[in-house]
Length: 63
Length: 138
View 1 (spheres, rainbow over the protein chains, first blue to last red):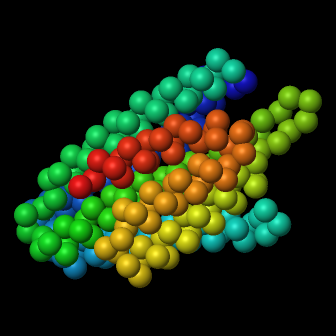
View 2: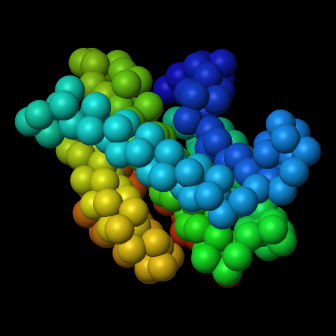
């Protein structure tokens, strides 16, 4: 159906982005995350995915 | 078709690996967090798993499959099922983080039920991986 490079390109675009908050936080600050920082990341991810869905919906109003 | 099978196998393997990563992260929630913070930490991992399914659906919708005529690799109606269920779930989780796991499992099951055959075929690897990831979070 598609050349392998196209398939792999698609896959790379949709591959899950699973971030380790602790590793990221440690790398930046050298300290463990606080409740407030974890909550901020949680809210930011929710808002990001809501915005992505809303943008798709706006572009496909009849879907 | 061989390429598609290859894609699905690769997607399954990578998502499985990602799932292990998520489970490991959740199992090693930072000791600096309070019980509420640990719950939020795990809820965040579940949100990422759910959001990844939506992101995959939207990206597959951008790809045109051309045989006699061109059409999105994942039809609009299937993406709409994913987007609407994910949006509803995320709104609920934001308001009631304690119920994140049941909300996400319910959304994933609703998506699986409402997709047509083509949608199920295209997204089965992502849905299966997301359910496995969420179930692995304790």
